[in-house]
Image (tube, rainbow, N blue to C red; front, top):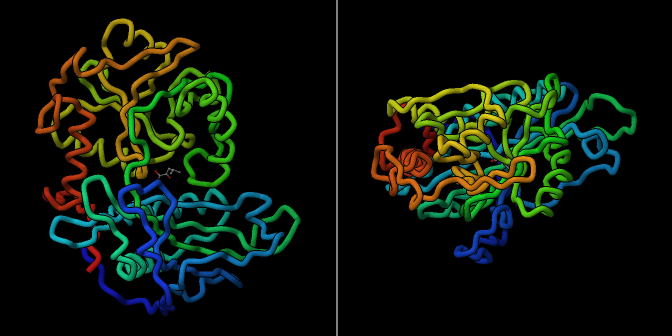
Length: 368
Ligand code: COI
């Protein structure tokens, strides 16, 4: 897919680029932001003209509703510098659809598709020098929407601001992660906001995650809100297991985020003829799989994380280590080292994103 320009978006360019301030060899996630941002306001029942302005602080009333009652939603997506130098935004349509679902759940207005897609393309085009080259690097893009009406009453805001900012990024997790199966706290219950990418889901996860960190883990592995029995997702990632050679992941529901990377990996696996099952994963099944050696891999998937191998899963005070390659060489296809499915899927995905393999699914959106 290649975009064509139609919508008028006025651009106010920065007078002083900060490009030279970036430490490109140490791209700490979310530390640097590109020179510009896109801003679009919603007032009197309408989205106004979007504009691109220099990156900078927002002016907000101290009683803007977002600050008090949490009407805030966001997306996380990426642009890649392809081998031929073109800039590729990965699956913007799918991110747009999820943002629209989040908006609906949080009683916020849906942003017109044209503003989202065209705004994204214009911003990335303008700041294209900020898209890093090199394996594993990308421009992380954060579209978000906040309620801006100044009121203290608990109510649906009449005014909103939609913003897109972008940040050059390396990988989110550098090493394999240790996750703790959470049996007390809940991320999302049926009927709640788990499937929406709203700020509150992340705010509510801080305390349990901090407790897990204090115990030596990196992340929580959430279980269902009713019985704490079935695996849901990890903090900033969906979660996938390789059980008896099948790629297994919990099915989507209203308490799980419909991850774009999750969807992409499942598609690639199916296309390769790898057995895939979207089905409930009982914690007891996981424990038994560790004890019988039926589990060979576990990894998280997400836009920021891409694929992040899980090294250890803590279940009720017991740590279970995933087998290392030395313990158990993999048997999966492809050129990825060690015949492991996680690295193979990551490579297959990155090959499409960087333009080394055919984009058979139409996922790439090339910014001319
Ligand atoms: C993403 O993967 O894009 C996320 O939104 C996770 C996290 C950085 C909030």
